[in-house]
Length: 78
Image (cartoon, rainbow, N blue to C red; front, top):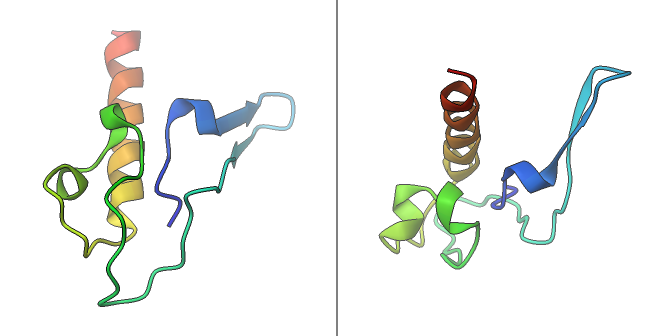
């Protein structure tokens, strides 16, 4: 789990048409039934389970962050 996906942590190379995720300082391996810290991610990209203090979460927090970034792009482009 990356746990800190935000636009500042995504690099886009237009010449090679590639996307890279950087800054793995908050990353951790996922183990079921393990308690994780909720003090991760930026407030605007934080998943609801983190906001509610759930310590049992998984990779879905990263998918939520990606969804927020894509929603922001769609709203910006309209």
